[in-house]
View (spheres, rainbow, N blue to C red):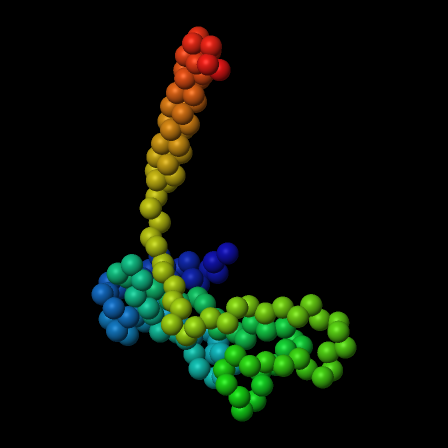
Length: 144
C-alpha cells in the first residue's frame, strides 16, 4: 500500500522522459529514506519504459542464518557455522550473476486480458465443434 507522501508526490510531479538511465540524473522525485547496510544509498532514478522511475528494490544477503561466506576465498564459497546445532532449515536463494537485470513492462490495459479470453473461448469452441462433427461422421461410417 502506498504511503500518503508517495501518493501526493505522484499526483504533483510528472515523470521525466528518458532514453537511458543517464537522463534520469535530474529526477528530484526519488528521495532517500534509508541507506543500505554498507552505507550506500540507492535513490537515483532509473530509466524504464522511457520514463524515469524510482527503484524500489533492496539488496540483501539471502542466506540462512547458519550459512556464512568464507572469508578470503572466491565468490560463492560458503560454510556452515560451527554453532548451528542442526536446527536450521538451511535455505538460500540461487547465486545470481551480477549481470542479471530486470525488465519493467507498462500496463497494457484491461482490454488485453479480455481479448485473450475471447480468443481462447473461440479456439475452444471451434475445437469442440470440430471434434464433435468428426466423431459423428466417423460413427456414421462405422469407423468409431
